[in-house]
Length: 349
Ligand SMILES: *Cc1c(COP(=O)(O)O)cnc(C)c1O
Image (cartoon, rainbow, N blue to C red; front, side, top):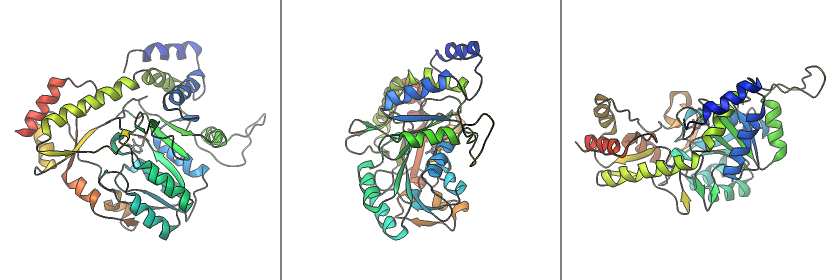
């Protein structure tokens, strides 16, 4: 936390709006729009619900196919199942993010309704190529920027290229409201629908009138107050995350390859991630654990998950290799430089 959160929460309590309605929700939405230059925003209970609403609003339904990164977190993919649609998994390329060539191959064969692209670990996917393909083949583009708030490509923010962008404010993300999410779009009507559907789809009548069903997905005013304070430190957080990455890189470059950044982009370096040239990452994780230092494997690709054993996928082997060789290092912005060097010392042995 930055320090201002409790002041803003006190304002909420003084106003007595302890509900998914109130002034701070709008302030938080405006703060995210000001920072990212997104046009319209709807604050929600988490990032997963934001992806779900995007699919629902775009009309993704039973039998539709949705292309999606295989190298990602389940929260990116489960909403496809909520809509009874079919995920089609696409492998990564050398950028670690989704491979546009495989997307094109799949687009030709599968006639997808939408693509959900994850900007993995805070680094931009090849968004220009994906935008081009979405127009060429006529599918919607949803950017899962849950990990990538603050990342930019050619000066434009992750989440503001596609039909919808999604941010998460879960406890592990670059800034947090403990749990929270946001859906952004340049389509005003869609964001209006998101606000309607996230508050139980209540029609404008004196009583509760329902023509369709919605969800209880709107963010609480209390958590939005935390978000307003967190937005004030986002710029500093990105800077510090990038410094942490550079320190690790300076220390470990001889024994590891770090996650790249595509040309003309600047990621938020949410987590410092790398693949070892020779070391077994699962052994390194155990060695660190003995010193009470938490490191994690990279995401296990979705096409390898038991849940998706029958799912269609376009696989080159890149994400499988990344999972076998890779690791996420401790990357919290409260880490001291001396602690980062100590971690590197332990890894080098
Ligand atoms: C965290 C995350 C989500 C889900 O966000 P929640 O707020 O936890 O629901 C989705 N996709 C990716 C890539 C994430 O890292």
